[in-house]
Image (cartoon, rainbow, N blue to C red; front, side):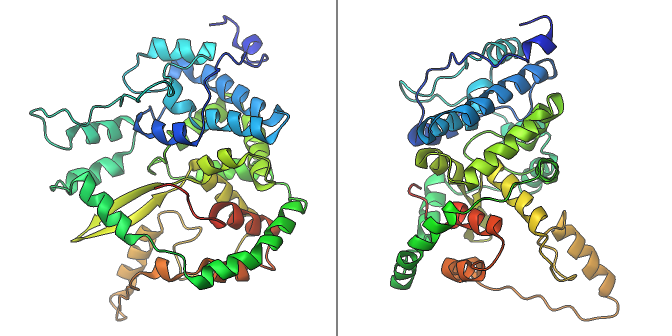
Length: 365
């Protein structure tokens, strides 16, 4: 560890990490639990590691190499900040650029043994982990709903039953759109202002669940506050994503989501947790586009919208009647081709984001 960090951070870390990572390794790494925050003594060196990783992506000469470095960047938390490692060991790994966890070369051993049965309450470990990551609301939800859950296989079977198959109409429509998508990728991409990207980072919910990788809002924020030029690098990376500058393998990792089955009474409600950087990109684009919405909607651009609408309803309950309407299977009824048609003449950033995030189905479950 260098004595003078100002001198240390001016040099990009030597790339001593020669592990080859792809989509399969990215999915395999989901079993590795990582810290949601960097130890205070390692914050500056974490920023240097993140900065060096971003620079390798941006300076790589080809899409293939950019994609390879990008996958390593997505897996930084699991490879350098796994649970069960001492702070001293983590600091040494971050400062040297040599990961503490290797994903290739054999089965990944979970850093948290879910199979261990002991005398503690069934949810105690999960509550402790969430509390340590400062996800207090999530921990409280588990405590308040301390009820037996379904087995993982039952949840998986229920989720599989929710997957929709493409209709002939969907397939025919996609075939007609291929040329338009290729033309869209050739257009000049409007530049994202770094100031709005930083605002998008700060707007992310710190209690949100992780995607397949271990990136959290706290990890990004810690790196940026230690070296604010990282915001510029993240902005360049997100612009590269919109310009089709990352390999297909790298984009497959970025757009992959973690499918979660939420128990709702006797049913399983499927929720997809998207990658943090895709959420940051989507938030930044919304800040640029500035969509206008009704004053009576609380789902877009309103922090803690469910809480706000609850208070609004309570304020109106004395003078008005309240009717609750629930649209069954509403999200499954939305057609991608209908959304694409609405965006046809819309802002280029919004169209590009749609094609990146929703243009093609996921290849793995």
